[in-house]
Length: 348
Image 1: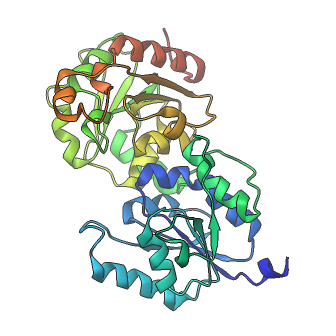
Image 2: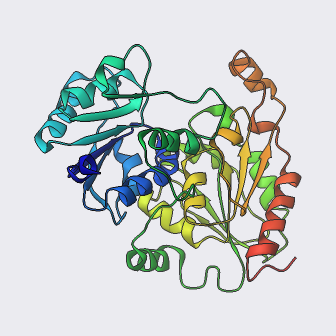
């Protein structure tokens, strides 16, 4: 259409966490396919938007630091100025906050597309309606584009990496022999909420179910998650501890190399899915039909239906299930199934 041909610069705004930005990838690909000549920029949290560092159609990443809270007026105004300086023709606002729509308006984005609600309707030029039917977040993001007139070709999460740098870094960090004769299994415990985390006790029970010399283990997590791994030890297999030792990009390289990833509802789970790594995904209060691996045959989802006494004490008014009650034996059975199906070196 003539109107689409006039679009030269597109801004995608999503302030969400890493997992949400990975789930945004089918929408980013859809926009890129429909506007092949446009320059595409993404604005969001620095760590989250880093997953698009090597996307072949994303020209620019605009970090918006919200670490000081949503009322950090200085950072907000600076981000709006960046938008105004670039004269965007079209903006897709996937973050459903008042602030994200206001930023696009103050940033002089000519056409502003987003889901409406009364607090921000006046800030949008294209006010679209979120579905009343519960659906996965990937579909919620894609529905915004469908209502705008774009038809997605895929719902798969995808993250691109620099293969050359990844190979060199992995050889240095993991050594040349890790995974050569047995599968590499990566495990993390952390998440954004306590009730979304698995316990060190559960993890230790799991890893010591693997027979002697049957797998190579890699521990993964952010620096503040180090405490979760205290006292966790494998009696049977080699462990490489990378907790707190990787950037988001380096974490993606590790996840790409794994034969299996085990972890809770978190960014690493979506990064592993996006790199086509088999995943055992652990869920409690959060709903995997909304935010779990989507249409992904290499995933096995284990969901707790119970709540532990500690979470009942601290979170009981808000949740009725937590990962702390997940049985290590159930996780092991799912891991063995996926290793038997997808890992070349697995010997049951």
